[in-house]
Image (tube, rainbow, N blue to C red; front, side, top):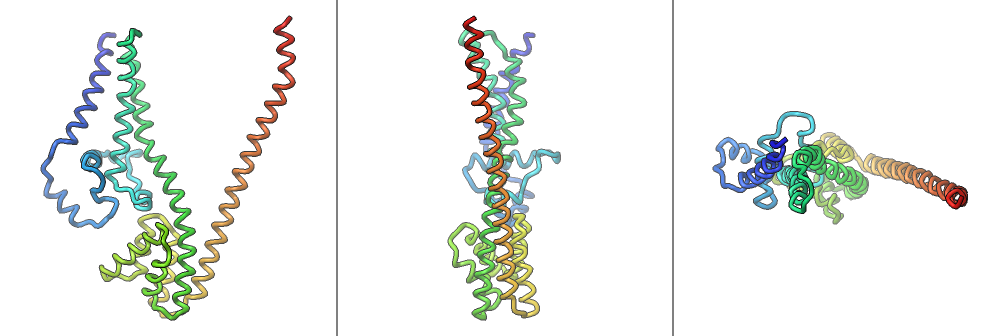
Length: 294
């Protein structure tokens, strides 16, 4: 029908209007300013380029409270990605994939092909959904790898804290000194949280426990639990820290061994399938040639 030819232009106009609307200067609402002044959440900071901030803020304020639109705050906090940057990537990918089929249809039409504007416009909808969820899949992969690396770092950190406690260092001093030894991003994040706790006047174990809850890293919560018991009762925690760190390392090694065995089995199955297909090809190729020649 003729009105299907209007769909590509409407999608293109909507996309351009969305981009222009995000670039126009807007007066900040007082409530939004007061809300930002009262928060210290690092992932909510308006970092990144001005375009990412505008688009991310615009999308964030209009997200519906429905499944598929929730923000994975723990994963974002762990990998250190601001919410605005995350939402900007989702909106950008969804918009580009939404209008890409319409552009392709217009280009084919200009080249002399039959106009398929309605089909191209409708095919952009599932592509837009794919683009919207692409950032979630990428973030989940990064967060999974980051949690595994963080767990390994915490296991080492536990033994360093135990060494500091054996030197009769107070709990707070032991936690801070152990965090200064490593140079990996895990130790950097721990140092930042301990530094904030010292400036805010809160216990170090409380800062680590809050950080563990915000990032979904239970191993760090275990460090906070042991440190809290020592800080409150004054008991020796050297053996507890050493045994806990050793237990974490053994658990991580077992998980890595299980994953390696799983990958090895998958590779063996795939290799066996390839060998079987080659054998079938060797057997049936002469038969096919004979049938073709007759």
